[in-house]
Image 1 (cartoon, rainbow, N blue to C red):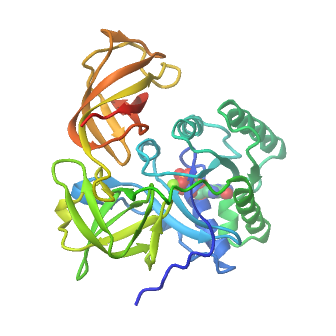
Image 2: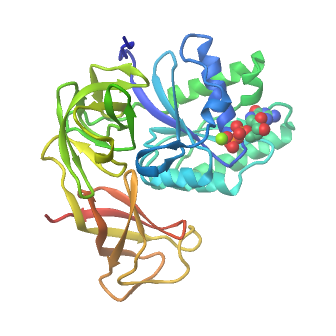
Image 3: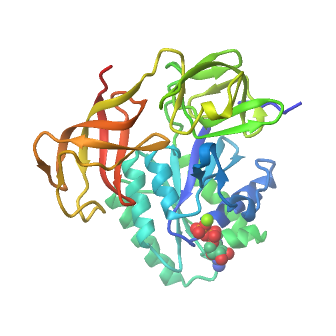
Length: 388
Ligand code: GDP
Ligand code: MG
């Protein structure tokens, strides 16, 4: 029988972000190694975190690794992603809903373009707290360390993260068991414990889980994974899949987190739900599982959209009414059309628009989304109304 997950500490979702090769994956492995010494984690080696992409439902690739660990006061789910594009995609679609982020900056290279972009991205998607791991501090020139520290502090203050703690670490040396640097990783975790508060969880709201991936477990059935956005779920509950063309209701026959059974999944948990009588092809990333009757799929909604300026990475030219970008909502992207109040809108403008999606998905007022074109984010929107 599987072990049960015993909820003794608050659960938080965090993750590493930062420029490629600054040491995110090495640090993630080091954290599990250091905490495994105190029984707070199972050690997850670098190769298992940086593994090849996992094939999820219907051929959509999800480049995101989850590891879990516990400090003295918290249980954490931690995500690490291999490439810059995975950060953009997972963060703006909300697949990685981070309560806090560990920004990894190499002390040898300093703030690089992706460092900057991830800080911008974190701010835009509402990551409330950032802690800096000034990595590769082993053997780094002390003056350079100070310079990079100042540069990083300035970047964070500029983007609404003033006073973010900065901890000098070496993921590589900690992984090798060097006591100076295992102590540094412990300091980093203490900074996360102290600086990132437990967020408010909407456990009283109707259950909602955006589908992240779908798996078939031989002999057991179809398992759907994702982060519970609101409410709670337990064995015996009926959930409804909403979005795309096919919807269904099914009874939950198992709730797990990180391979352990849970009595009840709660908002903020990474959960795997076993569904009775559901075929794998019936569920896909982009749908939501919800308490029956609480969500509906829409082809059309109205929204307020801010168009990023060229300096923010957006377009240099105006968009015309009828513009057809990709809309990134929760865990998926859908192509659609945007109708403007006038003929044109300029980068830097905030406009009230009508969106027509190519496929119906669950939306509701207040839901945030990103507007992307040719692999870059050109707008950030909020749904204002979704008429039946
Ligand atoms: P990621 O792309 O941010 O995930 O970076 P990786 O974790 O893959 O690390 C990139 C490279 O930097 C690898 O060759 C690591 O061995 C090296 N590296 C990572 N952390 C450290 C560190 O603390 N010190 C030193 N000297 N090298 C490191
Ligand atoms: Mg990596």
